[in-house]
Amino acid sequence: MKVKHRVSKEELKEDKFQEMVERVAAFYYANPKRFWTGVVVGLLVIIGGILFLHNRPRPVKNPEVELRLMDAIGNLFQGNHDYAERALKDLTGRFGKEYAGIKAHYYLGVLYSRSQPPRLDEAKREFQIFLKKAKKDPVLIPAAMLAIAICEEQQGNYLKAAKVYERVNQRYFQSTLGFEALLGAGRCYRKAGDLAKAERVYERYLKKGRPAADKAEEVKFFLTYIQSLKKKF
Image (cartoon, rainbow, N blue to C red; front, side, top):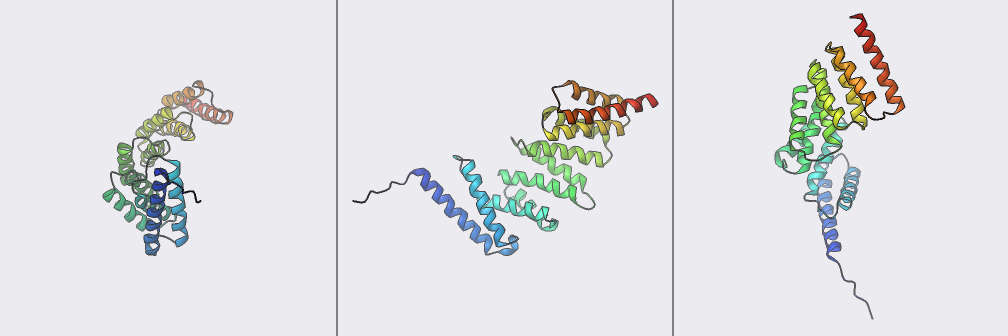
């Protein structure tokens, strides 16, 4: 006597998701201009499946949009800026309410900041749109804030940059980005001629918490340098 296997609702959901992913992959594979190669399509399908399983029980609303975003990001970092810009703008325009569309603003900011020459005003605008729309993203939110500070510094707006750097450092004190923001704040206050604020930033870091030895030594070096400049002026 054969024992019938009862398919659970969860298994049915996963089967439906798998079927949908396969159809999306087939669509992209049939249009090679939309993706770099068929191999990448396969990788994106695998990544999409992993993300789905990792985020259960929340269903993936639109895996095609995630695939489009991955495609755009891949082209961005391969240097295909024209294609990436068109793809990212399409995502922000057509899928602005989905998180993939929101993240597209962040990557447009990256694209504009990497352009030659850099399109810094456009980059800042896209990073700011991302920060306004993004709710919780422990990776991209501090990265976007830091990117805005870097843009301001490149434009010579040293005090504005220093203040943004300080906000990143205060919110993400223990992270690598937080430490880079600390160095950026001190550097920009020095460039702006405000040595007292640069000194304050470094001293606060050394007093707050227990920084790693290598980071503490680096900050002490910059603090000593600032203090020597103050004596000269």
